[in-house]
Image 1 (cartoon, rainbow, N blue to C red):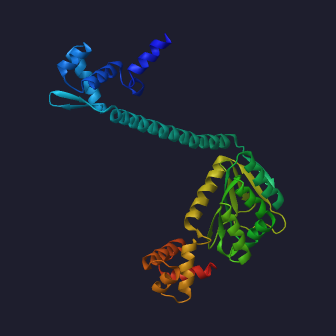
Image 2: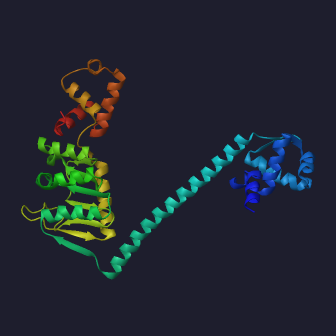
Image 3: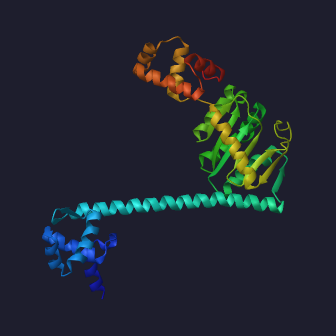
Length: 334
């Protein structure tokens, strides 16, 4: 029995690729004849000509057989198999994308469901947090439950940034390095203007964190994953000097709103540190070098120098080189 199945499998190699038994048998006959008319093929497989023609049309559509006037020509098996495999892979890729889209839609619908349930029940899980230690350790603890956890955070003032960097920067940087956290932060520009703060930002960047700066950030807040948000006791007011009174809110609707706000701030913010290439041309231009002189100094073409200026202008949101220079100096890049 097993031997019979194995022999059948060897006799119909295309069946597993979607060919019917009739098509597989007909293509095998076509390979032996190489070139044949409809009547010759019908005689070879001992089937009525109209049945053979239906199967042949399918083989032609699959690219296994070519038709030339009254004759049919078998294509090389490698070409036919290659086309069948490619079509199967394309179909599998489309199905995989559809599954991904369904799963993503299910995730979005789940957030709506959770938000509606919370709204109907009138119950939001809120935890008061009364100290910086408790706040920062809560972030690490929550991240450890489902790493890597995406953290987005807004820092509106220098004191909050210094407090974070001095007390907890090392822990968060290590968590980012270890793949526990995936942080992105939008920071007020004056909060990172000091050299010490720029060093901390460089360490965050080296650990894989994303950092951008804005002239003004509306308030302190963060969102961790899809289920937890951190909010100050009073929106827009800096956290108290000695007690970080704030709340951890476990509600998808709140997290979604803060994430939307963060993405808006992120889109308007500029990188805290430029790419090395952009920084080089800005610094050389600040010393009065022309494009030609910068190109000779760096060992690149003038065209490359101008492309790097364009890169720097894009990073700084500047409309001209002069504007880029002013903005770079204001940010402490030069």
